[in-house]
Structure formats: structure tokens, C-alpha cells
Image (cartoon, rainbow, N blue to C red):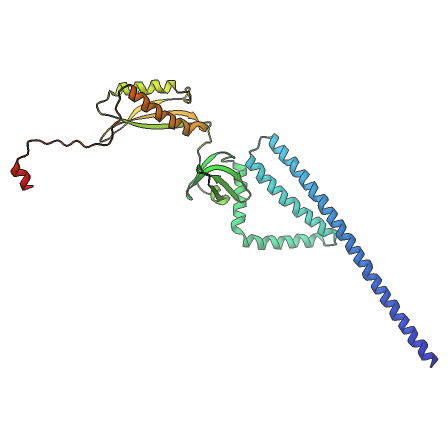
Length: 297
């Protein structure tokens, strides 16, 4: 009987010892895992600080190189995504995940994402083309053919370009559309040619009209005087002789110059007694109408 009790006691002691070792192993593993998690969190914040530091260096370098703000924002966003992917890969490697496995997972994920987001990837490629070819910059006024969008370039992003219209609306155009369609950069050059058409009466002296307009252009401060100026008969309309004017102004003063020149033309024509006709119809009768002819009609 005593032997049986001794055997039972030995078995219980053995199981307790085994359970103690098992629980101690769990505690050790939990402590190791907890330590790793804490270290990974610390490394993540350090990595994020380093990424911000690198991005600041890149931005300052680009700003010193006088790169357009839109391109700077695009490059900054691209660098941010790449660095965070590298950081996540390094942290996963710290947990014992093999680099080859990470590359394989990223490759599979990249293929899946590429198939699911073909449009977004084409927009990203379009953004890269905009960055390399530089058809426009922040602040330029552009017209995107095909989609009927136009406005001042407000932002050039990784996937979209945002335009601000003259009536303060925001238009978002995919970069793939911008890079694959005809685009007019209205403000690419420092000066723009302004054309104004004004009608005068057929009774007006054309030479006098052209002389008055020429003297007016010579007095205007917004006209770029070292560029060609043209004054010509543009068309013989039914009610007026249309006189055309072409001259150059600074791109930032285009609309203000147009409004000012029209006002000045009206005042100058009033002072010079030059008539600006309205639409009219002259009816000429070849002979006196009789009562019988009127009744027959």
C-alpha cells in the first residue's frame, strides 16, 4: 500500500513539474513577444521620424533646385510610400519573417492590386509622365481637351490633378487623362496676345479709326510695346465695319487689360465722334406704292 502511494505521489510530482515548466515557458514566450512588440513599436516611431527627416531633406533639395511645387508634392508622396513599405518590411523581418517571404508576398499582393486597380496605376504612371515632361506647373491655366475641363492648376497629386476654375470651383482630373490628351497651357509664356474686335459705322473714316486706335494703344500702360501691334479691318458686316486689334499683354493682366481697353475704346470713340452702330436694317422702296398694289398684296 505504501508503495502505491509513493508511486502516485511521484506521478503527481512529475506532472506538477511538467506543468510548471510549461507555464514558465508560456510566461517566457509572452515576455519575449511583449518585449519584441515594444521594441517594434519603438522602432516604428524611430523609423517614422527618420522618414520625416528624409522627406524634409528631399523637399529642401528640390526647392533649392527650383522644382515646381506640384512636382515636389508628387515626389514627396512617392518617397513616403516607398520608405514606409521598406520600414514595414524591416519590422516584419525582426519578427523572424524571411525577406524572401516578404518579397513573395509583396509580389503577389502587387499583382493582385495591379489587376484590381489598373485605373489608379495608369493615373500614377500619368503622374510620372507629368513630372518628367513638365507640360505645366502649379499656377498655370490649362485647358484639357476631351473632358472640357479648364482652370488654374491647384495641385498635382500622385493620381489626380486638381484645377481651380474662375468661379472658384474645384475640378479633379485623372492624371492618365491629362497625360494622354491634348492639353493647352494658356499661361505657358510670360505674355499673351490679346485680340479685340470693335465695329464702326460704314460712314466712319477707316484711316481715322485706325489712327485713333493706334494712338490709344501707344498710351496704354498694360500693352507690351516691344511686341508687334496690329490694327486691321477684320470683316465687313451687315451693320458695321469690324476693326481688329492684336497686341501683347502680361499673362497675369490678360482679363484686366481686355476690360480696360474696351472701356477706353468707347470713351475715345465718343470723344472723336466715331459711331459704334447697333444692328439695323435699311429698307429701300424703288417707287411710290399705290393703293391698288397695297390692296392686292
